[in-house]
Length: 290
Image (cartoon, rainbow, N blue to C red; front, side):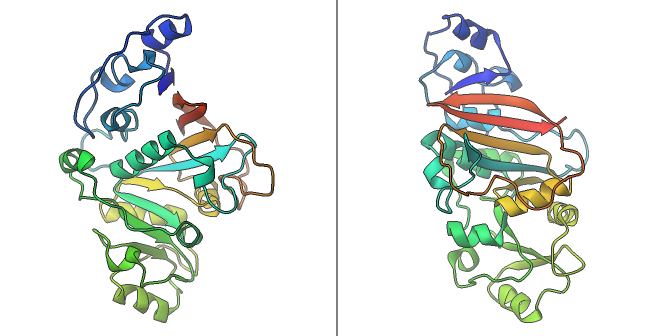
């Protein structure tokens, strides 16, 4: 993996044919890597080296909010082919890569909560987030539990409550729904051990209210993995702070969804590029609110 942006002394040297010496970077996962916030020391010049989990954790650390209570920060993590497909035959795995999955796991390990739509839970066969020893020290230092919670956005609560996501999570699964959700489905969710949070006046969920409700539970480091319909709702509501987008060097054609669908916005939102990594032709971009 190599860093393409922001440009540093090492990336500039690599562009002109220099900086080929290999350098090992240590450090525990979840802790800042040597070289400060700009990224791992010397790693920018290395083209064919797999970054450690510690380096990835430093590269994707949530922004500091200064003194006082943390403010919620909602980031999305999505993958897209060159021609804009977010899935192939209903799943994201065929357009992913080993490096993409390492970043996927790192983003999960940094988060307090993973927000996902009910349809994605059903299609991707979601399971509870697991505790990973490599990130345990970093999570303890950040005041986090052993693993992030899963928060499902759903109006109808059309979910199988016998699945491990409800029967055996390390932390209770959260269900975000509307005030008029069917009482019998709410009761079934609570009986299964889920925490039901009302985040909308009608059947649906208000994205801004969902972000605030999760923050009130202590989940300020928020990550959404979609699907496209949910991400589109978050974009339309202007609550997304950051997009981590993997561009897969593949063409799929067909009628697959984009990474975001649903309602449009009156004026396109402008984000700024924060970082860009590359490995094996895959681009790993990170955009923030401008």
